[in-house]
Length: 169
Image (cartoon, rainbow, N blue to C red; front, side, top):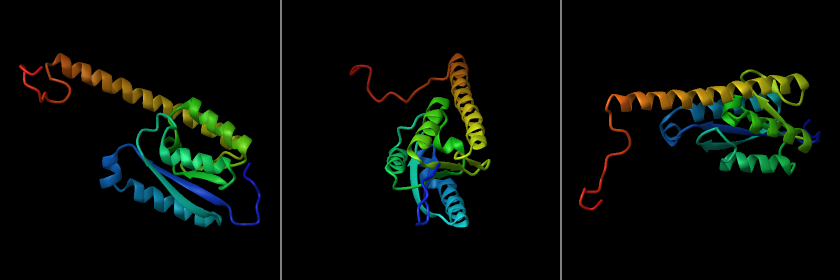
């Protein structure tokens, strides 16, 4: 459960997109930022937005690593995100985050669906969502491998074009 303080709670609003191209040309980061900022204000929390670009398959992302260190150190009260899959697509990683938040005294709030892990029912819902997110990530990998295998059978050359001459190779 989050620490009780006299000051307004601080939420670290974590936003993520999967690719650098999405970060540079898409609207998702702006949408996530606006949604989370509005929610923090509605709850009476101060908010600081932290962003990453890249896969959610593990927790090795600079923004998330920094946010978790600050939460653990008691510098913030909540990790706030629009959905679980923005934070993690791994059941094991998410279970570790739930355990860590309980031990260190910070909460995780996910807006879609509305889940607050400071309550037992919120932790149950979040664990179910983590399983679904991991399943979805694994299905994407299976579909990609199947699609590439089919294209190879069709004679499509895979990979990037060769830039070295046969002589040089």
